[in-house]
Amino acid sequence: MTHLDTSFLVDLLREQKRGPGPATRWLEAEAETPLAVSVFVQCELEAGAANAAHPARERERIRQLLAAVTVVGPGEMFAPVYGATLVDILRRGKSIATMDLLIATIALEGAAPLLTANRRHFDVVPDLTVLTYR
Image 1 (cartoon, one colour):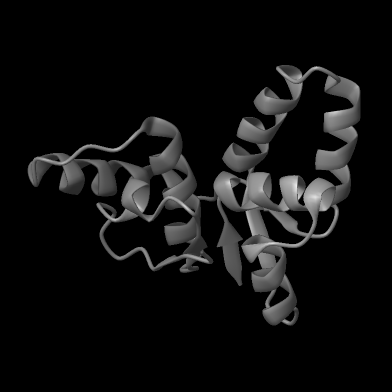
Image 2 (spheres, rainbow, N blue to C red):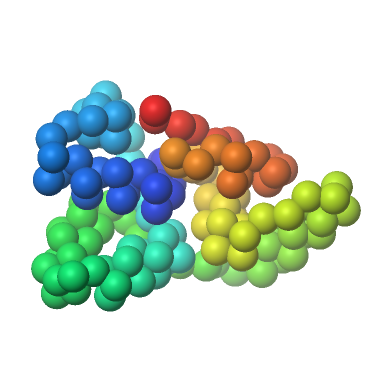
């Protein structure tokens, strides 16, 4: 299973309007790969929809998109994995945005790679396999 970051889904939504691009091509090439989205990615998408010129239309596009993937919430090991990962990052003198760490932790908890356009956001996370599509 591959977890999808918000950046991938935003690119995919944009490509639905303007035509195929790298996100669409990755999806076509990996058609057999099971896909997941963390509830935190869903939150970021919903925030974007709420800020759109036509929120209801954007929410519907998001609902259609998320119907094709598994939405994953925090499991039993989420908090310990989050805590240990944050401490490791901080002890190395690095930092990470809270939402990015939440998204990364869900992928770590499921031992899944994370697909993103923003590799540098996640490279500080130990043991996370970060994939890109651009």
